[in-house]
Length: 282
Image (cartoon, rainbow, N blue to C red; front, side, top):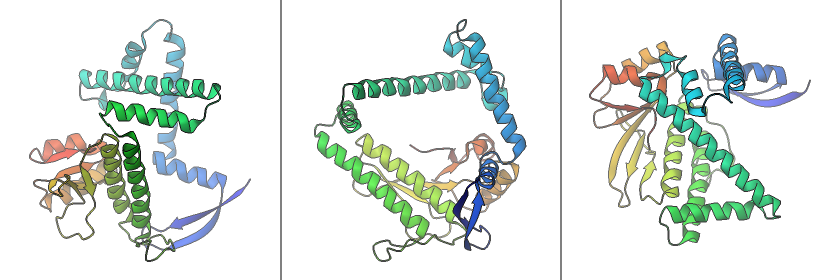
């Protein structure tokens, strides 16, 4: 058994302490963090085992999309309708196939004695060409700069400090830290996607916030605000949903896109039909 040093943040007090925890303790904490409880973990394990066994028995008799759609149909509560289930089936298969194709291409590239860096450079050029980029070098520099900025902004968000003025990284004790991280992550993901597709749009997290002020602003190249976003990632359960509904009722979120956990989207769209509510923003 090995011991692992970890930083523990008390969400109630905001205090930070260093503790030594065994691998078993860390594994148990991860289980609770991901699955909420051991029962959910066991259910997830059973579902995975069921899919693996089913595929082993039917991979030679059913087309992949037919088989996966058939398995998904066993969980009707997840899908709004049959079309949504079929669309999810096709998207998952397409994503897995593309990832496998890229892996095969990478291994073939390495087998020729070439480097991973040259393979990545070729993929960047291909992506740039597909996006209609003329200057590939400039395109790569833009993507690299956005990635650098995303890392720096997340560090500053977590430390709640300006790293240029105070280079000593200290974890923020703010009780809203998890919310700030979610906002920064959503903005960073938007900016990475925008840079990758050569879009002139940019997501910004306002430095100063007031009542009803947006968490994220989407701006065009001139700085004009095109969209206001509120990030409301409450716990994905009934209690979290009830708290979220109360939050929405007590604020003015008109002309604002609300980004919430996917488990809450349908219920909130039903209760607040005049608001723009989704689980992601692209």
